[in-house]
Length: 535
Ligand code: GLC
Ligand code: CA
Image (cartoon, helix red, strand yellow):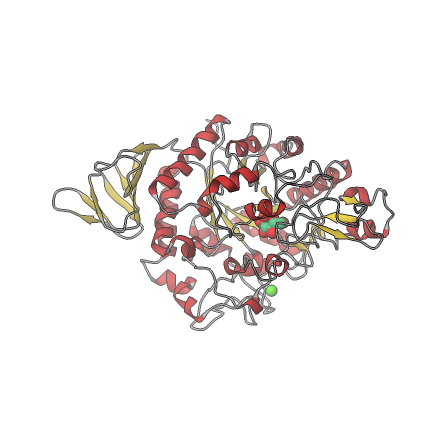
């Protein structure tokens, strides 16, 4: 029998290295800190870790501004630490996914430094998007950075360079074959060092079209790309379809090449997952065609309301769309760019939704701290570090709230994360969320995750597709209940604020907040909770 590749239905734990564990008291998490806590990750029951960037970087955008993609930033350790991390992970049976950032480099990368010194039209400049100013001195077009402000910055000789993100993140010119050659070198470098896969940052952004044309609504466009903005989905989607620098056909050529590179490692089963914010949703499936990447993030659950019709649509659509290309979906409730799920939809709701998605086919991604039920950190403006905060002059608070370090143990903040001063403050009220505390509490979110992930392995991984269930009292899209059956497990979620009695066969496997047997043979599912039953 052919064994399914490891990544097919893996549970993947995202670690933001700066916020996980600090081994040397400088207040910032690091690679040795991760290595020393991999047993915790293993006990959680995940199959792999994804490490957000730890490469040499001036850290203007949390390391997504890479100055040397083939080395480790001293704040995180060195290459030997990376090797050690990978080898300990492998010895525990955990795969390792590295985060690769091909859309841009840091302005401190030697290529960009050389480009600054070189002349207009030189090969050094041709690695980026350098253009002359318009005759009236304005930038080549009116695009606005995703972090706010213009997406062009002028250099000494008057030319402008393009940066879709911070001005310290010049976009690379993927029409220049040197760029691809260098990235293939980087991919091989990390594969040779032992990594098992890649998360591809801004995977939809590499190819730009119409660079010398103005966009009719640049502000609308950059608003549509902001996660924190409440915008009518129709308006957002209409705008997204007009983005001249995202989701262009050319990106797929790049991933076809990369897929050949990954496949050349045969049994190593190197995988890649695309960060691609695209619309309409069907476009996402193009990234996971048989000769492209293995997975693409489905971001719908990062913004979906805790409502049965919304969740049904998002989940059902993702499963069906992936089926058309023979791929499996991905499920993520939180990541380092979005508000934490417990803050966004509520603590009970976050537990329920996690349990609901852990049963689904495909890969489940967990953002470190999510298993503890962490909310967003409450920060003063003076604590903030996200470039979007600065580039919008504070109008956007940015993503730091989701990046506050993890509380591990002890009675006082920073709860063992560091012996120094944490790079973002940890509130004293986080004591209840500490790993030590939650380990002791059988009702904790940590216990729920551990139990659920064991059961996911036993009953769900490889169990085929789901079948939506008509709940006995309401249709599938009832306001109160959402239920599916997978293999011999029935998963029921009650989305209402009242407990719901329902007829469901089988023995209770796990519940996000308990279940009561009613006298009439029905089960009572508590408000805002989810339960698995084994037939
Ligand atoms: C991705 C990353 C985000 C980063 C941006 C620019 O969206 O997830 O953290 O700021 O790319 O690299
Ligand atoms: Ca450190």
